Length: 431
Image (tube, rainbow, N blue to C red):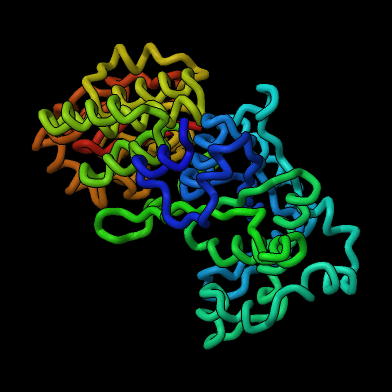
């Protein structure tokens, strides 16, 4: 597989330094991408650059993932409106470990010569003194060169600290250190990182280049993803979509992909799926014939949920979808195993009530209006009207009377009652 050609047809190539393709076609090459450990989990905004490493390894090259234990203490100013808060060393270590575990779901760390490796730039920066760093890196770049970078120019009007201004020197020195000690010849990243990456190639050129300034190191970036309407990809109403199942449940993760717009899916499939061109084009053809079936969304949601969370998690997600939006029955709900229950209903709004509150409800209207703190219906009158319009069901059974007694409804797992308001669901948990 030709790495550059693979990126081209997938729409994943933004900028590439001259000579890069020739170097990659000549021999197995080591390349890396840096990940900022500002959280204990990566999110789907990181997926495009992760996939760069995946395709890089599939093309026979050796991928490195750099976790910025040192640079994470400062924060990259690239296209940020203000300086970020510093993280303490203990938090950074926790975050680094979380990222390491997630990358193992994508990269093969035990496949022979081109096994993936993970490095932490704190390991070499912790022993470098300030004066040594100025001599090793600062001497080789002019202030004019550093100020010409877009990431710096955009902050000059609002102000940039010396700490953030020096970030590109740190990232550039990373590349130089890895070039010298790991024979890494290529750095990759999102298109917003081009300035930082080429700072590294410039340091290498000036310190290691021959008389003609021959480039021995290379740079490559992938486009930043946006939605078809121009808005930023990777956010939901609730914020980031995390790869950690405790931050974003597998169900919420699956639903995020399922709800993407048709016009975005051809690009998303090429960037995030490992499917080949013919298979993706076949999905597009099938989807165009029956768009209501959301064939492309389901294919991508399934592939990513399995890869990131597991086949078992995916099967649980399908059951949850059937329970919440499909043709599930009371028997379906009663058949859910206890260990699956919380996973299936992880993304469903819930209200906890006491057994005393449950006992004091005269009928179903009391429960879904008063006791649930108006989370389901704002008033008893609204609840009664919805019941009269046949719009309310409890445990997938239509409520036929506003005065219906709670004794008519069996608690699931002896603790739960599922109220469906049209297509929206609310879970009552009796404590």
